[in-house]
Every structure is written in C-alpha cells, then in structure tokens.
Image 1: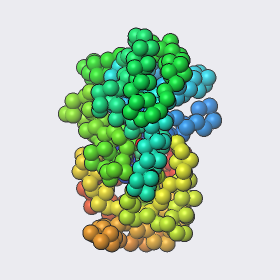
Image 2: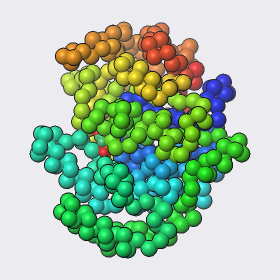
Image 3: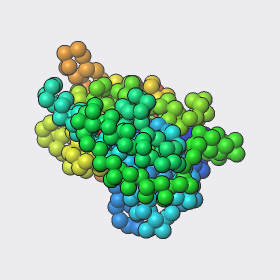
Length: 412
Ligand code: IMP
C-alpha cells in the first residue's frame, strides 16, 4: 500500500473507463483513508453508489463515496448539478448515523441546482426522442441533461443564488419553462425545497477552487472522485448516448477549478468484463445465457434506477482509448471474481466498419478468486489475462477487485 500511495502522489483522480458502474466506490473508500480532502467534480444524482452505514446499505447519489471518513473535508465542485432534497436526505442519513457532514462539506457556489421541473423535462425529452427516432437515450430521468442544458444556455440557477431570495427568479423561470416546453413549474413546492436547503446549508456554500488551492498550498492531499465514466463523456463518449457532463480526468479538473498540472495520478477503473445501462452501441454485449450469467454473478442492476445492466466483454480499444484520454497511471480492474466460473474469457480487440468484432480468448481459471489479497494467490490464467491488459494499454494493473468486501482487493 505504501508503495502505491507514493506512486499516486498528492492529487489523485479515480475515473471510470467504461460506461459507469465499474465499482469506483471501493477503491475510493480504500484510498480516501489516506487522503486529506475528498472532492467530487461533476454529474448529479444520476450516479449511485452503495454505502454501508452502521451495517445498513444505503444508495447515495450526490454525497461522494469518500464521505464516510470522518473529519475529512468533502467538496462538491462547480461541475456538479445538485438536487437539493436528495442531498439533504443523504446528509440526514449520515447524521442519524452520527456523522455530521455539514461540519466539513463545501458546495461550490458555481454548481447548478436541479429542480423538479428538470426531471419533468428529462422525461418529456425522452418521450419525444422515442417518438421521433424510435428510442430514447435511456437517461436516469434525474433531470441531468436539462440542468446542464440551462447551464449552457446561461439561464441556470446556481447554488450561490441560495444566498438570496429566489422568489422572483423562480417565478420568471416558471414563465420561461411554461412558454418553451409547456411544463408547469410548481413554484411554491420548488421554493419550499430551496428554503430548507437555504437554512441547512448556509454555511456550506463557498468558493471551492479557492479552498482547494489553499489546501494544496498547505500541503494537503486531494482525492478526486469521478462520476459516470469515460465512454459517457459529453465530448469524448459514445454520443449521443452519453451523459451531459465532462467525465474524464480533464473534466474533473475543470469541474473543480484545479489546474491540470497539479494532478499527480489517475486511477482508471474498469470491470474485468463490461456493462452498460441505457441505450447505445455495445459491440461486445452478450444478450443470451452468458450475459445473464454475468449479470447474476456480478449483481448487475442499476443502483439509481434498478434497471438490469446490459452485460458483455471488455473491449480493448475502449480500454486503450480511456487510458489515452485520461492519462491513466494505474488500473483498478474490478470484479475479477465474477469471471471465476467462465470456461472462456473474451476480450474484444477490434470492431470493424461492419460491426464485426474480433476477440482474443483466454482460458478461464475455473476456481475461486474471491477474497484473494495477493497477486501470487491468483491462478495463472487470471494473471495472464491481467498481464495482457497491462501489455496492451501500457498501464500497470495496480489494484484488483476480488469480491464485494472492502478487504477483497489485491494491491500490487
Ligand atoms: P443521464 O446522465 O441521466 O442523462 O443518462 C444518460 C446516460 O448515462 C444513460 O445511458 C444513463 O444510463 C447513463 N448514466 C448516467 N449516470 C450513470 C452512472 O452513474 N452509471 C452508469 N450509467 C450512467
């Protein structure tokens, strides 16, 4: 661990390499213990990670996975879109467990507020898209796209606006939304939700970039928690089947207001296979028995929407591209144990213009890797598979997930 931490340096980003749900939460949880500040840069309540609080499982959407580490400042960056009732609920769950996040939470005053009407717009846009093209994006319906849309239109309402009275702003917004989209904004309800947040979070709104810069000057270390993942990036992902934020390492720096050169490492997180929720191309998808097996063994159901995830094999082109776009310095390959029973483990090498995919096949190891904590304990075939990822991507596999428990991790 010491060796790994030294190689990560003071500012580390953890970024998903595929379509999200790679299991970033576990490596973040492990690393968070060793970093001083935890920062989330982008996205909103479309993300979902399960956190066990006092033995009870909770799905958190806005609060970073690293928030359980008491005493550490937690930053929600300017790149985020925040649904305030969800945030308040998550804070209250933590508080009930004796962990008062409001004592150490800083929300960027430049982050955007997600209102109920954004969710209605999200659902409406999905329906319209389905009508015109036959299929939607398959969004999480959390209002993410419409919130970023208003941000880009320069008509969004920001967290910093909570410092004043929002009544006039909300009333004007209701008129605009009604005339543009025919959606009735429940101004009273929206204002009530805001009021609660205004009272509870008054002391938590501030200048996040300044705080992070000061922390760096004081010698603090920062763990940056990416949300969603590279192939869902608005610029570099599988457009239009993407989310509406920048999900790469560079996007994370932008979302936090940190200059790119301060980043000392970037851990790419990828499953040993691949999953996707929502629509869009998935060249290695297995729709039959193999897909079902991976889904059941991997518990592949969306944390936010409960949707069954589409399952398939790792695509090496995507891995290489993600490593290139983010500058990965380390891999965390997760859920290796899900492949324990597979006869053959496939890795896609190429998908051509005609959508034909060629594969490299690895013989399965057909034995349990659950709970293994050292490289030496891994079966030879599993080591060959992981070594192949290193060779192809030129990025070392430094962490390997071998089960759901926090301790089920090989640090190499
Ligand atoms: P949106 O972010 O809700 O607009 O959804 C856009 C696409 O990104 C959909 O395919 C979603 O399923 C996907 N998506 C958004 N957030 C996540 C995530 O945290 N994990 C996996 N997929 C996500």
